[in-house]
Length: 549
Image 1 (tube, rainbow, N blue to C red):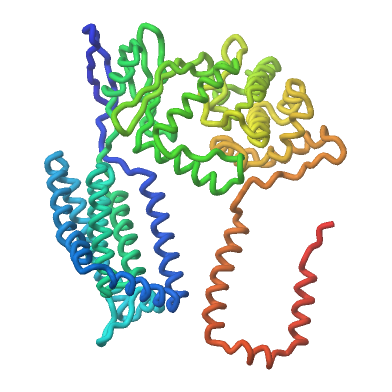
Image 2 (spheres, one colour; image 1 turned 120 degrees about the horizontal axis):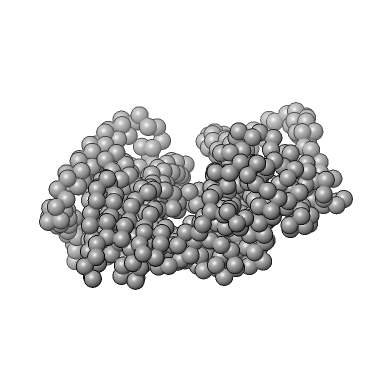
Protein backbone atom coordinates (compact mmCIF):
# COMPACT_ATOMS: atom_id res chain seq x y z
CA UNK A 1 0.00 0.00 0.00
CA UNK A 2 1.19 3.49 -0.80
CA UNK A 3 0.22 6.75 0.87
CA UNK A 4 -0.20 9.72 -1.44
CA UNK A 5 -1.02 13.17 -0.04
CA UNK A 6 -3.43 15.40 -1.95
CA UNK A 7 -3.80 19.08 -1.11
CA UNK A 8 -7.14 20.92 -0.81
CA UNK A 9 -7.50 24.37 -2.29
CA UNK A 10 -7.30 25.79 1.25
CA UNK A 11 -3.98 24.05 1.88
CA UNK A 12 -5.29 21.07 3.91
CA UNK A 13 -4.22 17.61 2.79
CA UNK A 14 -5.99 14.36 1.94
CA UNK A 15 -4.25 11.06 2.70
CA UNK A 16 -4.88 8.50 -0.07
CA UNK A 17 -3.93 4.88 0.75
CA UNK A 18 -3.96 2.28 -2.02
CA UNK A 19 -1.58 -0.16 -3.75
CA UNK A 20 0.06 0.89 -7.01
CA UNK A 21 -1.99 0.04 -10.09
CA UNK A 22 -0.76 -2.76 -12.34
CA UNK A 23 -1.98 -4.82 -15.25
CA UNK A 24 -5.48 -6.28 -15.18
CA UNK A 25 -7.41 -8.97 -17.00
CA UNK A 26 -10.84 -7.72 -17.96
CA UNK A 27 -13.78 -10.12 -17.63
CA UNK A 28 -15.35 -8.52 -20.69
CA UNK A 29 -12.42 -9.84 -22.78
CA UNK A 30 -13.22 -13.41 -21.70
CA UNK A 31 -16.87 -12.90 -22.59
CA UNK A 32 -15.88 -11.48 -25.98
CA UNK A 33 -13.54 -14.44 -26.58
CA UNK A 34 -16.32 -16.96 -25.93
CA UNK A 35 -18.64 -15.00 -28.22
CA UNK A 36 -16.02 -14.88 -30.99
CA UNK A 37 -15.37 -18.62 -30.77
CA UNK A 38 -19.09 -19.37 -31.00
CA UNK A 39 -19.53 -17.05 -33.99
CA UNK A 40 -16.54 -18.53 -35.81
CA UNK A 41 -17.68 -22.11 -35.21
CA UNK A 42 -21.26 -21.34 -36.27
CA UNK A 43 -20.16 -19.52 -39.43
CA UNK A 44 -17.83 -22.31 -40.56
CA UNK A 45 -20.40 -25.00 -39.73
CA UNK A 46 -23.12 -23.16 -41.65
CA UNK A 47 -20.79 -22.64 -44.58
CA UNK A 48 -19.97 -26.35 -44.58
CA UNK A 49 -23.65 -27.28 -44.76
CA UNK A 50 -24.59 -24.73 -47.42
CA UNK A 51 -21.61 -24.79 -49.77
CA UNK A 52 -23.68 -24.60 -52.94
CA UNK A 53 -25.85 -21.70 -51.80
CA UNK A 54 -22.84 -19.74 -50.55
CA UNK A 55 -20.95 -20.29 -53.83
CA UNK A 56 -23.88 -19.06 -55.93
CA UNK A 57 -24.41 -15.98 -53.75
CA UNK A 58 -20.70 -15.22 -53.88
CA UNK A 59 -20.64 -15.39 -57.68
CA UNK A 60 -23.54 -12.94 -57.84
CA UNK A 61 -21.78 -10.50 -55.50
CA UNK A 62 -18.51 -10.72 -57.43
CA UNK A 63 -20.43 -10.07 -60.63
CA UNK A 64 -22.02 -6.95 -59.11
CA UNK A 65 -18.63 -5.74 -57.82
CA UNK A 66 -17.00 -6.20 -61.22
CA UNK A 67 -19.35 -3.54 -62.57
CA UNK A 68 -17.78 -0.83 -60.38
CA UNK A 69 -15.58 1.75 -62.02
CA UNK A 70 -11.88 0.97 -62.33
CA UNK A 71 -10.96 4.14 -60.41
CA UNK A 72 -13.13 3.15 -57.44
CA UNK A 73 -11.69 -0.36 -57.41
CA UNK A 74 -8.17 1.07 -57.48
CA UNK A 75 -8.96 3.41 -54.57
CA UNK A 76 -10.32 0.48 -52.56
CA UNK A 77 -7.14 -1.49 -53.30
CA UNK A 78 -4.90 1.40 -52.22
CA UNK A 79 -6.88 1.94 -49.00
CA UNK A 80 -6.69 -1.75 -48.18
CA UNK A 81 -2.96 -2.08 -48.94
CA UNK A 82 -1.09 1.18 -48.47
CA UNK A 83 -3.65 2.54 -45.97
CA UNK A 84 -3.36 -0.52 -43.77
CA UNK A 85 0.44 -0.24 -43.69
CA UNK A 86 0.27 3.47 -42.80
CA UNK A 87 -2.25 2.88 -40.02
CA UNK A 88 -0.10 0.15 -38.46
CA UNK A 89 2.88 2.54 -38.41
CA UNK A 90 0.78 5.42 -37.02
CA UNK A 91 -0.59 3.26 -34.21
CA UNK A 92 2.91 2.07 -33.36
CA UNK A 93 4.19 5.67 -33.16
CA UNK A 94 1.16 6.60 -31.03
CA UNK A 95 2.03 3.90 -28.49
CA UNK A 96 5.68 4.95 -28.36
CA UNK A 97 4.77 8.62 -27.83
CA UNK A 98 2.42 7.63 -24.99
CA UNK A 99 5.25 5.59 -23.35
CA UNK A 100 3.56 2.26 -24.03
CA UNK A 101 6.40 0.46 -25.74
CA UNK A 102 5.57 -2.78 -23.94
CA UNK A 103 2.03 -2.67 -25.34
CA UNK A 104 3.52 -2.16 -28.82
CA UNK A 105 5.69 -5.24 -28.27
CA UNK A 106 2.62 -7.26 -27.24
CA UNK A 107 0.70 -6.08 -30.31
CA UNK A 108 3.58 -7.09 -32.61
CA UNK A 109 3.79 -10.51 -30.92
CA UNK A 110 0.01 -10.95 -31.34
CA UNK A 111 0.27 -10.01 -35.03
CA UNK A 112 3.10 -12.51 -35.53
CA UNK A 113 1.18 -15.23 -33.69
CA UNK A 114 -1.90 -14.50 -35.80
CA UNK A 115 0.06 -14.73 -39.06
CA UNK A 116 1.72 -17.99 -37.96
CA UNK A 117 -1.60 -19.49 -36.89
CA UNK A 118 -3.15 -18.49 -40.22
CA UNK A 119 -0.35 -20.23 -42.14
CA UNK A 120 -0.72 -23.40 -40.05
CA UNK A 121 -4.50 -23.50 -40.53
CA UNK A 122 -4.09 -22.82 -44.26
CA UNK A 123 -1.87 -25.87 -44.61
CA UNK A 124 -4.24 -28.06 -42.56
CA UNK A 125 -7.26 -27.00 -44.62
CA UNK A 126 -5.58 -27.29 -48.04
CA UNK A 127 -4.24 -30.73 -47.15
CA UNK A 128 -7.78 -31.89 -46.38
CA UNK A 129 -7.25 -32.56 -42.65
CA UNK A 130 -10.35 -30.54 -41.65
CA UNK A 131 -12.84 -32.30 -43.93
CA UNK A 132 -15.66 -30.17 -45.35
CA UNK A 133 -14.03 -26.92 -44.18
CA UNK A 134 -11.98 -26.95 -47.40
CA UNK A 135 -15.09 -26.61 -49.58
CA UNK A 136 -16.58 -23.98 -47.25
CA UNK A 137 -13.56 -21.63 -47.08
CA UNK A 138 -12.11 -22.06 -50.57
CA UNK A 139 -13.21 -22.32 -54.18
CA UNK A 140 -11.60 -23.77 -57.26
CA UNK A 141 -9.54 -21.55 -59.56
CA UNK A 142 -9.67 -21.65 -63.37
CA UNK A 143 -6.14 -23.01 -63.28
CA UNK A 144 -5.27 -25.88 -60.95
CA UNK A 145 -5.52 -25.18 -57.24
CA UNK A 146 -7.85 -23.42 -54.83
CA UNK A 147 -8.06 -20.02 -53.14
CA UNK A 148 -6.50 -19.37 -49.75
CA UNK A 149 -8.74 -20.50 -46.85
CA UNK A 150 -7.54 -17.62 -44.66
CA UNK A 151 -6.06 -14.17 -45.25
CA UNK A 152 -2.98 -13.92 -43.05
CA UNK A 153 -2.68 -10.13 -43.37
CA UNK A 154 -6.24 -9.63 -42.07
CA UNK A 155 -5.62 -11.99 -39.13
CA UNK A 156 -2.37 -10.25 -38.17
CA UNK A 157 -3.77 -6.72 -38.56
CA UNK A 158 -6.88 -7.28 -36.46
CA UNK A 159 -4.83 -9.05 -33.77
CA UNK A 160 -2.47 -6.03 -33.72
CA UNK A 161 -5.31 -3.51 -33.46
CA UNK A 162 -7.08 -5.53 -30.73
CA UNK A 163 -4.00 -5.62 -28.50
CA UNK A 164 -2.84 -2.07 -29.26
CA UNK A 165 -6.17 -0.67 -28.11
CA UNK A 166 -7.26 1.12 -31.27
CA UNK A 167 -10.85 1.01 -30.02
CA UNK A 168 -10.11 3.63 -27.36
CA UNK A 169 -9.50 6.44 -29.88
CA UNK A 170 -12.39 7.34 -32.16
CA UNK A 171 -10.29 8.64 -35.08
CA UNK A 172 -8.03 5.58 -35.22
CA UNK A 173 -11.02 3.29 -34.71
CA UNK A 174 -12.82 4.74 -37.73
CA UNK A 175 -9.63 4.59 -39.79
CA UNK A 176 -9.09 0.94 -38.81
CA UNK A 177 -12.63 0.02 -39.84
CA UNK A 178 -12.19 1.75 -43.21
CA UNK A 179 -8.79 0.28 -44.12
CA UNK A 180 -9.51 -3.26 -42.87
CA UNK A 181 -12.89 -3.19 -44.61
CA UNK A 182 -11.22 -1.97 -47.81
CA UNK A 183 -8.61 -4.75 -47.61
CA UNK A 184 -11.33 -7.37 -47.19
CA UNK A 185 -13.45 -5.92 -50.00
CA UNK A 186 -10.46 -5.71 -52.32
CA UNK A 187 -9.54 -9.34 -51.65
CA UNK A 188 -13.12 -10.47 -52.22
CA UNK A 189 -13.59 -8.57 -55.49
CA UNK A 190 -10.28 -9.85 -56.80
CA UNK A 191 -11.61 -13.42 -56.50
CA UNK A 192 -8.54 -14.57 -54.62
CA UNK A 193 -10.39 -15.37 -51.38
CA UNK A 194 -13.97 -16.21 -50.45
CA UNK A 195 -16.26 -14.06 -48.32
CA UNK A 196 -16.47 -16.70 -45.59
CA UNK A 197 -12.67 -16.98 -45.53
CA UNK A 198 -12.39 -13.21 -45.04
CA UNK A 199 -14.99 -13.27 -42.26
CA UNK A 200 -13.23 -16.19 -40.58
CA UNK A 201 -9.90 -14.35 -40.87
CA UNK A 202 -11.33 -11.27 -39.16
CA UNK A 203 -12.85 -13.29 -36.30
CA UNK A 204 -9.65 -15.34 -35.94
CA UNK A 205 -7.58 -12.17 -35.65
CA UNK A 206 -9.95 -10.88 -32.96
CA UNK A 207 -9.63 -14.20 -31.10
CA UNK A 208 -5.81 -14.06 -31.19
CA UNK A 209 -5.86 -10.49 -29.90
CA UNK A 210 -8.27 -11.32 -27.07
CA UNK A 211 -6.22 -14.35 -26.04
CA UNK A 212 -3.10 -12.18 -25.93
CA UNK A 213 -4.85 -9.64 -23.72
CA UNK A 214 -6.05 -12.36 -21.37
CA UNK A 215 -2.61 -13.97 -21.22
CA UNK A 216 -0.63 -10.79 -20.46
CA UNK A 217 -3.34 -8.51 -19.17
CA UNK A 218 -3.74 -4.90 -20.21
CA UNK A 219 -2.48 -1.66 -18.75
CA UNK A 220 -4.99 -0.44 -16.20
CA UNK A 221 -6.84 2.76 -17.01
CA UNK A 222 -8.44 2.92 -13.58
CA UNK A 223 -8.31 6.40 -12.07
CA UNK A 224 -5.98 6.55 -9.06
CA UNK A 225 -7.25 7.34 -5.60
CA UNK A 226 -5.94 10.89 -5.89
CA UNK A 227 -8.22 11.48 -8.91
CA UNK A 228 -11.16 10.00 -6.98
CA UNK A 229 -10.44 12.26 -4.01
CA UNK A 230 -10.13 15.30 -6.28
CA UNK A 231 -13.52 14.51 -7.86
CA UNK A 232 -15.16 14.26 -4.42
CA UNK A 233 -13.57 17.50 -3.29
CA UNK A 234 -14.87 19.11 -6.46
CA UNK A 235 -18.38 18.01 -5.45
CA UNK A 236 -17.99 19.87 -2.16
CA UNK A 237 -17.22 16.94 0.14
CA UNK A 238 -14.70 17.65 2.89
CA UNK A 239 -12.53 14.52 3.18
CA UNK A 240 -9.17 14.00 4.87
CA UNK A 241 -8.54 10.30 4.24
CA UNK A 242 -9.36 7.81 1.48
CA UNK A 243 -8.36 4.14 1.79
CA UNK A 244 -8.99 1.34 -0.71
CA UNK A 245 -10.76 -1.49 1.14
CA UNK A 246 -12.11 -3.64 -1.74
CA UNK A 247 -9.91 -3.58 -4.87
CA UNK A 248 -12.07 -5.62 -7.27
CA UNK A 249 -15.58 -6.25 -5.98
CA UNK A 250 -18.28 -7.23 -8.43
CA UNK A 251 -19.79 -3.74 -8.37
CA UNK A 252 -16.55 -1.76 -8.59
CA UNK A 253 -13.76 -0.61 -6.29
CA UNK A 254 -14.67 0.51 -2.79
CA UNK A 255 -12.93 3.13 -0.65
CA UNK A 256 -13.46 4.09 2.97
CA UNK A 257 -13.42 7.85 3.31
CA UNK A 258 -13.44 10.07 6.37
CA UNK A 259 -13.51 13.74 7.20
CA UNK A 260 -14.97 16.29 9.59
CA UNK A 261 -18.51 15.36 8.50
CA UNK A 262 -18.05 11.65 9.28
CA UNK A 263 -17.44 8.41 7.40
CA UNK A 264 -18.00 7.95 3.68
CA UNK A 265 -18.59 4.83 1.60
CA UNK A 266 -17.02 5.60 -1.80
CA UNK A 267 -17.56 3.33 -4.80
CA UNK A 268 -15.82 3.67 -8.13
CA UNK A 269 -17.20 2.13 -11.31
CA UNK A 270 -14.61 1.87 -14.09
CA UNK A 271 -14.27 -0.01 -17.35
CA UNK A 272 -11.91 -2.64 -15.90
CA UNK A 273 -14.12 -3.79 -13.02
CA UNK A 274 -17.44 -2.79 -14.59
CA UNK A 275 -17.36 -5.72 -17.00
CA UNK A 276 -17.63 -8.24 -14.15
CA UNK A 277 -21.06 -7.11 -12.97
CA UNK A 278 -22.30 -6.54 -16.53
CA UNK A 279 -21.17 -10.02 -17.62
CA UNK A 280 -22.82 -11.72 -14.65
CA UNK A 281 -26.10 -9.90 -15.20
CA UNK A 282 -26.04 -10.65 -18.91
CA UNK A 283 -25.50 -14.37 -18.28
CA UNK A 284 -28.23 -14.38 -15.62
CA UNK A 285 -30.53 -12.54 -18.00
CA UNK A 286 -29.89 -15.20 -20.65
CA UNK A 287 -30.59 -18.00 -18.14
CA UNK A 288 -33.72 -16.55 -16.52
CA UNK A 289 -37.04 -15.43 -17.90
CA UNK A 290 -38.53 -11.94 -18.13
CA UNK A 291 -38.55 -9.77 -15.00
CA UNK A 292 -36.91 -12.45 -12.82
CA UNK A 293 -33.52 -10.94 -13.77
CA UNK A 294 -32.65 -7.32 -14.52
CA UNK A 295 -30.75 -6.65 -17.73
CA UNK A 296 -27.19 -5.33 -17.46
CA UNK A 297 -26.24 -1.67 -17.71
CA UNK A 298 -24.16 -1.55 -20.87
CA UNK A 299 -22.15 1.58 -20.02
CA UNK A 300 -20.57 3.02 -16.89
CA UNK A 301 -22.79 6.10 -17.16
CA UNK A 302 -26.02 4.05 -17.26
CA UNK A 303 -24.81 2.02 -14.26
CA UNK A 304 -24.07 5.17 -12.24
CA UNK A 305 -27.45 6.66 -13.13
CA UNK A 306 -29.19 3.47 -12.02
CA UNK A 307 -27.28 3.39 -8.70
CA UNK A 308 -28.22 7.03 -8.07
CA UNK A 309 -31.87 6.44 -8.99
CA UNK A 310 -32.11 3.46 -6.65
CA UNK A 311 -30.55 5.45 -3.78
CA UNK A 312 -33.02 8.31 -4.18
CA UNK A 313 -36.03 6.00 -4.59
CA UNK A 314 -35.12 3.93 -1.51
CA UNK A 315 -34.60 7.08 0.55
CA UNK A 316 -37.97 8.47 -0.58
CA UNK A 317 -39.63 5.20 0.44
CA UNK A 318 -38.47 5.82 4.03
CA UNK A 319 -35.98 2.96 4.16
CA UNK A 320 -32.79 3.44 6.17
CA UNK A 321 -30.04 2.95 3.58
CA UNK A 322 -26.82 4.59 2.34
CA UNK A 323 -27.46 8.28 1.62
CA UNK A 324 -26.13 9.44 -1.74
CA UNK A 325 -23.97 12.54 -1.24
CA UNK A 326 -22.17 12.89 -4.57
CA UNK A 327 -21.84 11.36 -8.02
CA UNK A 328 -19.22 12.50 -10.50
CA UNK A 329 -17.15 11.42 -13.47
CA UNK A 330 -13.49 10.55 -12.89
CA UNK A 331 -11.81 10.72 -16.26
CA UNK A 332 -13.36 9.38 -19.47
CA UNK A 333 -13.87 5.77 -18.34
CA UNK A 334 -14.94 5.91 -14.67
CA UNK A 335 -17.34 7.51 -12.20
CA UNK A 336 -17.54 7.76 -8.41
CA UNK A 337 -20.48 7.53 -6.01
CA UNK A 338 -20.14 8.71 -2.39
CA UNK A 339 -22.59 7.58 0.29
CA UNK A 340 -23.04 8.22 3.99
CA UNK A 341 -23.24 4.67 5.40
CA UNK A 342 -26.07 3.79 7.80
CA UNK A 343 -25.40 2.52 11.31
CA UNK A 344 -25.73 -1.13 12.20
CA UNK A 345 -24.23 -4.58 11.69
CA UNK A 346 -25.16 -7.07 8.99
CA UNK A 347 -27.25 -10.17 9.64
CA UNK A 348 -24.24 -12.22 8.64
CA UNK A 349 -22.62 -11.14 11.91
CA UNK A 350 -25.67 -12.14 13.99
CA UNK A 351 -26.87 -15.48 15.37
CA UNK A 352 -30.35 -16.85 15.90
CA UNK A 353 -30.16 -15.92 19.62
CA UNK A 354 -29.37 -12.31 18.72
CA UNK A 355 -32.60 -11.83 16.73
CA UNK A 356 -35.75 -11.08 18.70
CA UNK A 357 -39.26 -11.10 17.30
CA UNK A 358 -39.06 -7.29 17.16
CA UNK A 359 -35.94 -7.52 15.01
CA UNK A 360 -37.69 -9.87 12.60
CA UNK A 361 -40.70 -7.55 12.48
CA UNK A 362 -38.38 -4.60 11.69
CA UNK A 363 -36.89 -6.49 8.75
CA UNK A 364 -40.32 -7.34 7.37
CA UNK A 365 -41.38 -3.73 7.88
CA UNK A 366 -38.40 -2.64 5.75
CA UNK A 367 -39.58 -4.96 2.98
CA UNK A 368 -43.10 -3.62 3.34
CA UNK A 369 -41.86 -0.07 2.69
CA UNK A 370 -40.06 -1.24 -0.46
CA UNK A 371 -43.13 -3.17 -1.64
CA UNK A 372 -45.45 -0.19 -1.18
CA UNK A 373 -43.06 1.95 -3.23
CA UNK A 374 -42.96 -0.76 -5.95
CA UNK A 375 -39.19 -1.18 -5.51
CA UNK A 376 -37.58 -4.58 -6.07
CA UNK A 377 -34.22 -4.72 -4.31
CA UNK A 378 -33.04 -8.14 -5.64
CA UNK A 379 -30.36 -8.48 -2.95
CA UNK A 380 -31.98 -9.13 0.45
CA UNK A 381 -29.19 -11.37 1.72
CA UNK A 382 -27.39 -11.82 5.04
CA UNK A 383 -24.57 -9.47 4.05
CA UNK A 384 -26.90 -6.72 2.87
CA UNK A 385 -29.44 -6.41 5.71
CA UNK A 386 -28.59 -4.31 8.78
CA UNK A 387 -29.82 -4.10 12.36
CA UNK A 388 -28.76 -1.34 14.74
CA UNK A 389 -28.70 -1.22 18.55
CA UNK A 390 -32.14 0.42 18.63
CA UNK A 391 -33.76 -2.45 16.74
CA UNK A 392 -34.07 -0.61 13.45
CA UNK A 393 -33.54 -2.41 10.16
CA UNK A 394 -31.69 -1.02 7.15
CA UNK A 395 -29.84 -1.82 3.96
CA UNK A 396 -26.08 -1.95 3.55
CA UNK A 397 -26.49 -1.27 -0.19
CA UNK A 398 -29.35 0.34 -2.07
CA UNK A 399 -29.01 -2.36 -4.71
CA UNK A 400 -29.37 -2.47 -8.46
CA UNK A 401 -32.98 -3.59 -8.59
CA UNK A 402 -36.07 -2.14 -10.27
CA UNK A 403 -38.21 0.96 -9.90
CA UNK A 404 -41.91 0.44 -10.70
CA UNK A 405 -41.12 -3.26 -10.44
CA UNK A 406 -43.22 -6.05 -11.89
CA UNK A 407 -45.25 -8.24 -9.54
CA UNK A 408 -42.92 -11.20 -10.12
CA UNK A 409 -39.88 -9.17 -8.99
CA UNK A 410 -41.67 -8.02 -5.83
CA UNK A 411 -42.63 -11.60 -4.99
CA UNK A 412 -39.00 -12.69 -5.48
CA UNK A 413 -37.99 -10.13 -2.80
CA UNK A 414 -40.47 -11.73 -0.38
CA UNK A 415 -39.07 -15.19 -1.14
CA UNK A 416 -35.51 -13.91 -0.69
CA UNK A 417 -36.18 -12.35 2.72
CA UNK A 418 -38.10 -15.43 3.85
CA UNK A 419 -35.16 -17.65 2.91
CA UNK A 420 -32.56 -15.30 4.42
CA UNK A 421 -34.34 -15.24 7.78
CA UNK A 422 -34.84 -19.01 7.67
CA UNK A 423 -31.07 -19.43 7.38
CA UNK A 424 -30.70 -17.60 10.70
CA UNK A 425 -33.74 -18.40 12.84
CA UNK A 426 -35.17 -21.49 11.14
CA UNK A 427 -38.17 -21.92 8.83
CA UNK A 428 -40.83 -21.85 11.58
CA UNK A 429 -39.89 -18.45 13.01
CA UNK A 430 -39.21 -16.99 9.56
CA UNK A 431 -42.62 -17.99 8.20
CA UNK A 432 -44.44 -16.98 11.39
CA UNK A 433 -42.80 -13.52 11.43
CA UNK A 434 -43.60 -13.01 7.74
CA UNK A 435 -47.25 -13.89 8.23
CA UNK A 436 -47.46 -11.64 11.29
CA UNK A 437 -46.02 -8.65 9.39
CA UNK A 438 -47.21 -9.00 5.79
CA UNK A 439 -50.12 -11.38 6.17
CA UNK A 440 -50.51 -14.94 4.94
CA UNK A 441 -51.63 -13.90 1.45
CA UNK A 442 -48.31 -12.15 0.63
CA UNK A 443 -46.31 -15.13 1.90
CA UNK A 444 -48.42 -17.63 -0.05
CA UNK A 445 -48.02 -15.58 -3.25
CA UNK A 446 -44.25 -15.93 -2.87
CA UNK A 447 -44.46 -19.72 -2.44
CA UNK A 448 -43.89 -20.60 -6.15
CA UNK A 449 -40.68 -18.52 -6.05
CA UNK A 450 -39.08 -20.19 -3.03
CA UNK A 451 -36.44 -21.88 -5.16
CA UNK A 452 -32.67 -21.65 -5.33
CA UNK A 453 -32.48 -20.02 -8.76
CA UNK A 454 -34.42 -16.98 -7.46
CA UNK A 455 -31.86 -16.28 -4.72
CA UNK A 456 -28.72 -14.17 -4.81
CA UNK A 457 -25.23 -15.62 -5.08
CA UNK A 458 -24.41 -15.53 -1.35
CA UNK A 459 -27.78 -17.03 -0.40
CA UNK A 460 -27.36 -19.87 -2.90
CA UNK A 461 -23.93 -20.60 -1.40
CA UNK A 462 -25.40 -20.71 2.13
CA UNK A 463 -28.19 -23.04 0.99
CA UNK A 464 -25.67 -25.68 -0.11
CA UNK A 465 -24.89 -26.33 3.55
CA UNK A 466 -28.59 -26.36 4.53
CA UNK A 467 -30.04 -29.01 2.27
CA UNK A 468 -33.78 -29.39 2.60
CA UNK A 469 -34.32 -25.87 3.98
CA UNK A 470 -36.28 -24.63 0.96
CA UNK A 471 -38.43 -27.77 0.98
CA UNK A 472 -39.22 -27.19 4.69
CA UNK A 473 -40.17 -23.56 3.99
CA UNK A 474 -42.47 -24.64 1.16
CA UNK A 475 -44.18 -27.23 3.36
CA UNK A 476 -44.89 -24.62 6.07
CA UNK A 477 -46.19 -22.03 3.61
CA UNK A 478 -48.25 -24.65 1.78
CA UNK A 479 -50.21 -25.24 4.99
CA UNK A 480 -51.30 -21.59 4.84
CA UNK A 481 -52.43 -21.74 1.21
CA UNK A 482 -56.17 -22.02 0.54
CA UNK A 483 -57.49 -24.99 -1.40
CA UNK A 484 -56.72 -24.69 -5.11
CA UNK A 485 -53.93 -22.10 -4.71
CA UNK A 486 -51.12 -22.87 -7.22
CA UNK A 487 -48.07 -24.15 -5.37
CA UNK A 488 -45.81 -25.53 -8.10
CA UNK A 489 -42.59 -23.50 -8.58
CA UNK A 490 -42.68 -20.97 -11.40
CA UNK A 491 -40.17 -21.89 -14.10
CA UNK A 492 -37.78 -18.94 -13.98
CA UNK A 493 -35.05 -20.47 -16.11
CA UNK A 494 -34.98 -19.75 -19.79
CA UNK A 495 -32.23 -22.33 -20.33
CA UNK A 496 -32.23 -25.58 -18.37
CA UNK A 497 -29.69 -28.42 -18.60
CA UNK A 498 -32.36 -30.52 -20.35
CA UNK A 499 -32.92 -27.74 -22.91
CA UNK A 500 -29.19 -27.40 -23.61
CA UNK A 501 -28.79 -31.16 -24.05
CA UNK A 502 -31.85 -31.27 -26.31
CA UNK A 503 -30.64 -28.38 -28.48
CA UNK A 504 -27.08 -29.70 -28.78
CA UNK A 505 -28.21 -33.27 -29.38
CA UNK A 506 -30.83 -32.14 -31.88
CA UNK A 507 -28.28 -30.01 -33.72
CA UNK A 508 -25.81 -32.88 -34.00
CA UNK A 509 -28.57 -35.29 -35.07
CA UNK A 510 -29.87 -32.81 -37.66
CA UNK A 511 -26.35 -32.34 -39.06
CA UNK A 512 -25.79 -36.10 -39.37
CA UNK A 513 -29.26 -36.67 -40.82
CA UNK A 514 -28.99 -33.89 -43.40
CA UNK A 515 -25.56 -35.04 -44.57
CA UNK A 516 -26.92 -38.58 -45.00
CA UNK A 517 -30.16 -37.52 -46.70
CA UNK A 518 -28.18 -35.55 -49.25
CA UNK A 519 -26.83 -38.89 -50.55
CA UNK A 520 -30.13 -40.84 -50.36
CA UNK A 521 -32.85 -41.27 -52.98
CA UNK A 522 -35.89 -40.46 -50.85
CA UNK A 523 -38.37 -41.81 -53.40
CA UNK A 524 -36.67 -45.18 -53.53
CA UNK A 525 -36.54 -45.39 -49.74
CA UNK A 526 -40.27 -44.69 -49.44
CA UNK A 527 -41.08 -47.23 -52.14
CA UNK A 528 -39.15 -50.05 -50.42
CA UNK A 529 -40.10 -49.16 -46.82
CA UNK A 530 -41.80 -51.76 -44.60
CA UNK A 531 -44.77 -49.75 -43.34
CA UNK A 532 -45.77 -52.32 -40.73
CA UNK A 533 -42.62 -51.68 -38.75
CA UNK A 534 -43.10 -47.94 -39.19
CA UNK A 535 -46.60 -48.09 -37.68
CA UNK A 536 -45.32 -50.23 -34.80
CA UNK A 537 -42.58 -47.70 -34.00
CA UNK A 538 -45.17 -44.89 -34.11
CA UNK A 539 -47.41 -46.78 -31.68
CA UNK A 540 -44.63 -47.46 -29.18
CA UNK A 541 -43.60 -43.78 -29.39
CA UNK A 542 -47.13 -42.71 -28.48
CA UNK A 543 -47.00 -44.89 -25.37
CA UNK A 544 -44.07 -42.82 -24.01
CA UNK A 545 -46.10 -39.59 -24.07
CA UNK A 546 -47.52 -38.67 -20.67
CA UNK A 547 -50.89 -36.93 -21.07
CA UNK A 548 -51.79 -33.87 -19.00
CA UNK A 549 -55.43 -33.78 -18.05
